[in-house]
Amino acid sequence: MIPYGRQEILDADIEAVVAVLRSDFLTQGPAVPRFEAALATYCGAGQAVVVNSATAALHIACAALGLGPGDLLWTSPITFVASANCGLYCGADVDFVDINAETANLCPRALETKLRAARAAGRLPKIVIPVHLTGEPCDMEAIWALSEEYGFAVVEDASHAIGAWRAGAPVGRGRSAAVVFSFHPVKIVTTGEGGAVVTDDAELARRMHLLRSHGITRDPAFMTHDPDGAWYYQQVDLGFNYRMTDLQAALGASQMTRLDAYVERRQALARRYDALLADLPVRPLRRDPANRSALHLYVVRVGGGGKGPDRSVVFDRLRARGIGVNVHYIPVPSQPYYRARGFDPAHYPNAQAYYAEAISLPLFPTLTEAQQDTVVSALREALSV
Ligand SMILES: *Cc1c(COP(=O)(O)O)cnc(C)c1O
Image (cartoon, rainbow, N blue to C red):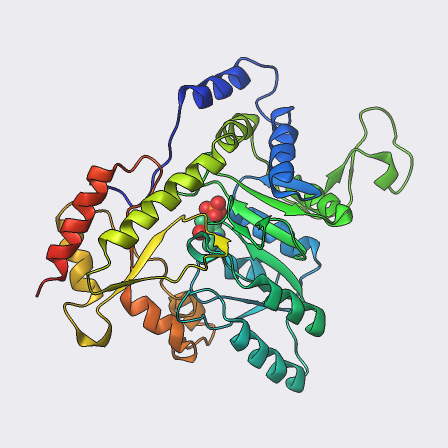
């Protein structure tokens, strides 16, 4: 089976992890701040806070921004469930803004329409989470302009998009309150499990550091009274254990040295797919030539307009030929948990239409051109009636 994504682990990664295993600290040691510094430097952001998953990163970003009961969080219906669940973890309500049909990213025009209606109804969102689907950056200038007009905070779910650039700046820099990355093995760089938040807001970073580790501080400046002694710590908030280990952080820092090479390789393979698929009845998602997508995924739409077999047939035929295709994503509002909370996927027609046709082809840095040719010829056969 050619998988849709997989990690690359080199000897340098293994040596970095083994060095931690031989050191004094397996967790809460120096590898974590070193990885945080590498992330902040790459993104040109003030600070990075690493945690044990992007799901945890989304949670602490929302919590540190003060999201709570009675508040509203909006995100895209075409994303992994974690982009919405983080709002529910905080006791807030969530809702979805339909996607742009060409890019499958949250549509700024749909956002504006929904914001106008929300203002009229007297209930605006506190946080909006755009998702850079496949690693293609969203139209952030439009979303930031709306955030200033309507007063919501932007948390970018950049789980697919470390190493992506827009308007000459890496994803992670800009006017969002926080930007979240995932280091799951199928993503661009990996720590096994892991995530991070980058932000320019030092106070927000401080609150996220607290939430990452039980709400406990050892800094007398943030205690309610002088320390009882050198052993003393205070719990000043209700936090979690969302810490990343030093083993993971060392792996992440080692992987970061290859981030640009990975994205360039993904770009080259994607351009090769574009060319090889040009005469087939499939439509790749639109990529803005002014962006550098991180190309976490290469998604094509098949079966539109009743021409040829539909997506499910093509999917089964490809899997039967050992091509590990996947579907990203099932619209979140159609999940039973969300339906039970009153969501109706029919309210997001672009998301529904996209879901009916989307298929993710294998794409990862070590995919060979020969493997890619195998994928394309299997797809050609799968599309024949
Ligand atoms: C992978 C992913 C997440 C969750 O990441 P974890 O690190 O597995 O918690 C969240 N949002 C999106 C869009 C993702 O692809």
